Figure 1 (cartoon, rainbow, N blue to C red):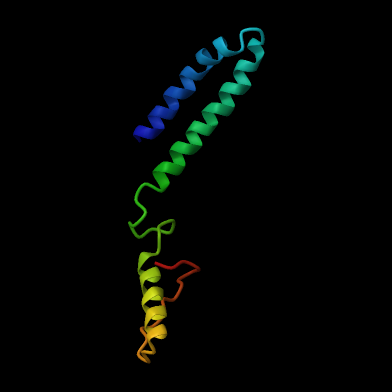
Figure 2: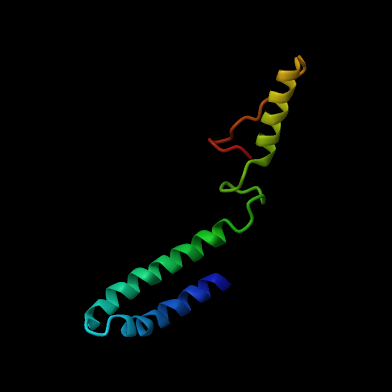
Length: 95
């Protein structure tokens, strides 16, 4: 929520900062401020979606599957015949 409020503050303040950068072409202020504010909002939304990478949601790192695959590979290299079962994807996602 804090990131989103900061993005909204940027949305309100960007036009004033652009006025000093482009003094001769005031008509560029609106499109440039919309583009910059949109980038700030996209960064805020992306950051809040990826805030906790190990929480167990769809966008997270499948750490259990990675560890399982490492264990299987190491045991295979050592010649161990008792390999643990491979992780199975559920609806196309490893949990």
